[in-house]
Image 1 (spheres, rainbow, N blue to C red):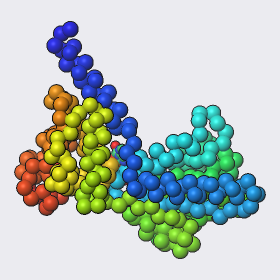
Image 2: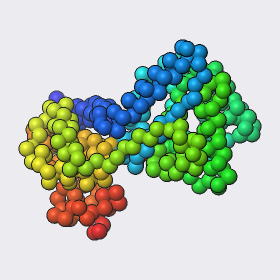
Image 3: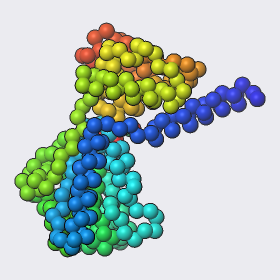
Length: 318
Ligand SMILES: Nc1ncnc2c1ncn2[C@@H]1O[C@H](COP(=O)(O)OP(=O)(O)OP(=O)(O)O)[C@@H](O)[C@H]1O
Ligand SMILES: [Mg+2]
């Protein structure tokens, strides 16, 4: 085999490992709360249906900053409830709010996603009536809307009220109320709080920022578990408080961003020949992702606590 072929083979192996690592779901506290809440609501909904009793649909609002892992968590939770291709009914439908998020456009795209495209664009009222009809036809018990904060962004007060009323009408439809799972950034909370009737029907699940103080031991185990999947040892320094604090800070305190960083560090180590995962691999991964110079790399800088890791770009001095 030529040197070039050897290099290609190794790159392919590393790429396969990285893809496998990215597909792995790491459990966390926010996910446990979400799953518990969803299972309660689903069980109550099924019991009410079996008993032929009318139900009041309820909702879950999954709220967290960018990179906290909302989309990944809801996708993982719902994976067993989404319909197979060709199935007529679906317990759950999942949908990403499109841009621009006018009520009419959202309804139109939602109909499309439910498998009932319209070739003309009637009024918003007609579109949403059809949405409610098809949700009932397909027996959808829960509808997930990702990026739900966009429903209220850049909208006039009148449009925001229309959004709130539309969501309420889905949940209060007498013949087939639909539970909502809304995931989005913290602005989502203000949207729901616009209407006390809507807010009362939602259970909030917060994806809180991670902290070394609260979950240091857990974080160390996650790093080790990911390393082991890639057949790497983990340097003992990665269990120390200083490293965990740097990792949390570099991830802007967001769980998902931390996992991305761990996988990227593993990739650096694999390209460096494998062996033991070290802090320098994390520094290299951060450098590659952001282009920063070592002086502002949170894995290398002395005063890393003051670095704004959300904004670090292009090696600028902060
Ligand atoms: N539980 C998890 N296990 C493994 N990887 C995760 C997990 N949660 C998040 N990630 C990783 O973090 C990345 C960011 O997560 P995700 O896209 O779910 O965040 P988000 O909260 O939806 O962010 P945004 O608000 O920007 O859409 C994902 O691409 C995934 O690689
Ligand atoms: Mg998301």
